Image (cartoon, rainbow, N blue to C red; front, side):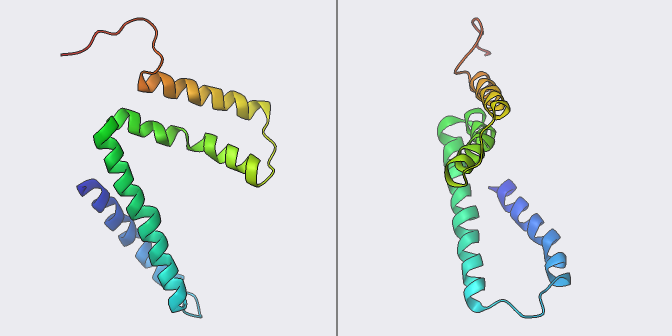
Length: 117
């Protein structure tokens, strides 16, 4: 929790001067502020809750596998919703990501591993 709080506070401190420097001539409406707050709470806050729950249930190694799969889902959603063409290179990259994720999480292994004490 300390790391998550630190990263949020740190990013706020870094972005605050830039936000002040590039403040628009017309201030954002109250509806825009509310929308930004809701997005911040829903997208970041809720995601952190899910992330920490996932870490406690399946462990950090399996949790980080979610991050590995982001490019695959981005390509899939691009193909479905934006009509983007999925090339053979993308499929090969996706298979490489799947193989690396399977090896990292222990779904696939070559030979037996001895458990460490």
